[in-house]
Length: 113
Image 1: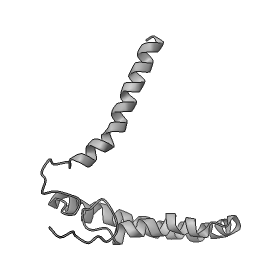
Image 2: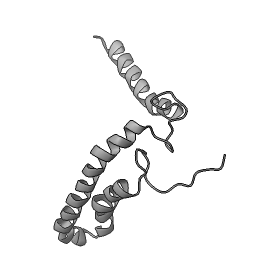
Image 3: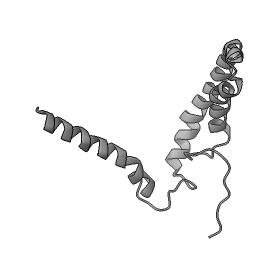
Image 4: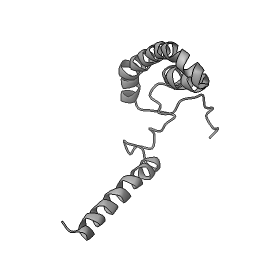
């Protein structure tokens, strides 16, 4: 392949991959307007309950152990807060604060219709 074709292919693939998140925000996966982030489908809730939550809880426990082991090194580096947030708080927040089947964590109030 010559240089022009290679460059054109790389630019086309890059543009396509960069457009995917924008397209995903405009429509949901099922195409049904009923299934939004605030009202996920039953299969997403079931998968979250059976697969994702136990893995996230295990990740939180393993992260807490890794945080304790790395504590002398993070204390010497002065980034205890960042290590605790990355290893313990973020997985714990995803495991315990996120609604069942939702993709974003945190409490949100529903807007009145």
